[in-house]
Length: 218
Image (tube, rainbow, N blue to C red; front, side):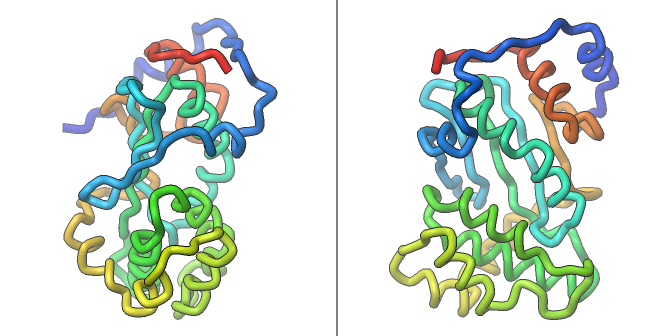
């Protein structure tokens, strides 16, 4: 059962400054060396070999404006922590919306992302957030043509990608695995709900440092 733990916030306030080795390495360069694998439920695991703790689970809806805000604030931090062996990140693309057109927009985007090979998924995810329909609730956002074009921009060269996206071949699987959540983004660190703390990259680094993990020198 998910619990919201206030003590995590207290811990952030009392922690000393954390210094990172290899901090001059750009996040995109660092994450390129970090293996990413797709799980049976459609989630993506970003972690160096042997890193099992701590675990950050990020549940995100690609049509969710607050998810895009979170992405803009902490994505580079998550990639850096994973590349340094300090964190195992599990991305869970979900559909939270029940109303149209947001629900269909979300399903199209999430299904298309499942058509992308794992090694290209982070780049495709970046494209999706960059093309999120505006204003929120725009009808026919994330069109099939746009989703295919996003794959080209992300460097997806997988055979059958276009037909997979246009046929929404992964939509049924996405909906089958879609969890019941109260909202997105939902961010858990070792099973504890982070809430607003997840939007602060410095605080997030400090909490992860307190939990420990495998720190690999850059």
